[in-house]
Amino acid sequence: MATRPLPTPESDPTHKKTDPTGTSETSVKQPILQMISSASKGRALQQHLHALMKKRWLRVAGIVIAVFLVLLIALPIFINVNSFRPKIETEATNALGRQVKLGDLSLSILSGSVGIEDISIADDPAFSKSPFITAKSLKVGVALMPLIFSKQLNVTRIALNEPQITLLKAPNGVWNFSSLGTAGEKKTPEPEKSGASAAQNSSVAKLEIKDGKLTVGKANSAKKNQVYDKVNVEVTNFSYTSQFPLKLSASLPGGGNASLSGKAGPINPQDSSKTPLEVTLKVNNVDLAASGFIDAASGIGGLANLEGTLNSNGSQANAVGRVTCDKLKLSPKGSPAPKAVRIDYAVNANLERQAGTITKGDVAIGKAMAHLTGGFQTLRETEVVNLRLNAPDMSVDELEAMLPALGIAIPSGSKLQGGTLSAELGIAGLADKLVITGPVRLTNTKLVGFDLGSKLGALAAFTGKAPSGPDTTIQNASLNARVAPEGTRADAINLTVPAFAVITGAGTISPAGALDFKMIANLHGGMVGGVTKMAALGGNKDSGIPFSITGTTSNPSFVPDVAGVAGSVAKGAVGDVVSAKTGATKGAAGAADALGGMLGKKKKPQ
Image (cartoon, rainbow, N blue to C red; front, side, top):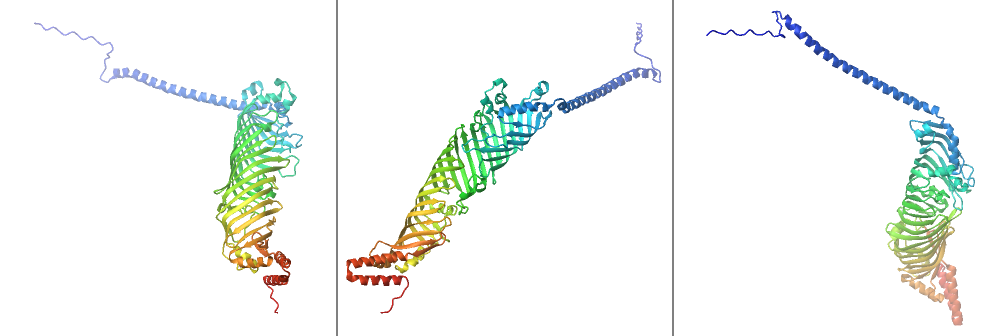
């Protein structure tokens, strides 16, 4: 079988013959490389163009911002904000009812505020011709769009910098700020044309007073005004017609600081001083003597802290809280007390009558507690009070530390120890000239470091031997006291010293502490023999031994009343004459001998 020849392979149109040197193969690869290179260069170009465009947009944005800033800076030049000054002055004057004067105005577009220099608001002419408020500057936040496009001034924020404000109170209780904002009400203008009504219908998101100085005093008074520094006030959502939050802080006269927070409003359109108020008050380390709240002549001093609340509807106010006093002093001659005094109080006040009632006044000295209640009223420049202090069974150990603060001095080197003190005192009169009256009773106490027996040694000539000891035990001591600026008087004194005497009498203590007491000692115990002898001579077994107490409260002196004793003896002698003439000469001679012996005289030899 014949072999069939294989077909001749067809030529490949894409196949190119290559010579041994490879020339045809190179010609095929070059277009491919060129395409790859071209594609690579296109992506790089695209990235380069993208970078260029990005830089261009950044540059354009920068230019736009710069132009905008230039416009903002230049805009105040085209908006003459001073043109608003007459309108602002007029509307403020109408709204406040006081003449308002403003200095130059400036506009800050970036902060959206109008600056005002040299502000002055006049006082009520009935109080003063000096300004009510002056301030270095005032910044008013404004809505920019209405200002730029419509030239309308819409206030969003007010900040008063370094103002000086003067508050004055008339004798009838009216304040110089009471008439603020009432002028528009009195004139009764049409609402749509009234600056006052427009102001009262508007609101301010934030109102601030920064680093102010507040002077408070009485109109046409010689008394020194009280000055409060670093006064800062912040009011939010302020409106005449609704309640608004507020915060206040200030440095107090003579040291210390106060802070107040709460709500006020709506503003009383007839009398802004009667605006309702609901606040919490804190006072720290106020110096009572330097503050000006209390007449310096009263001698009251110390450092006080207060925490409380005050709620007022404009005519009635209720205050509740606690006062803590350190280093308290209650008398011109007193010295600071080593113990703190705490007072929990509740007070109701009638603001129109300038009168009030203390419904709670719990005074705590350690565990000792007293209760103060009563009323008070302001009359012209002083307070008049009518109070009652009920102090049942107060611990003497707690009270002993308060004696120096009250100006009460006990004998030098001695102290009261143990027992209780009870008192029911009336406190009445002018606040700086109080008169305190009522019974005081001391029970089962001891005067440590004071030997009353030795002090009564001067009476030993009239009696037997006086018992002596380092301390004096007092079973009971009672008196009716009257403490007044002119001095202290003690009546119906009854002092029972179980060891040797019951002492009665009355006397006075001068403001300087000088004693002038007339007393009678009914002695017993080891001294009874002498008393019996005197009773025999005087004819009165119950008359006792008269003596005086002089000197000072810190160093008392017990002096026998010789004239009183002689009178008693003579009276007894006369009685003997009347009863039996025969015994008169003997009785008189015996009396004379006895009196001579008591005075230290010797009998003449017979």
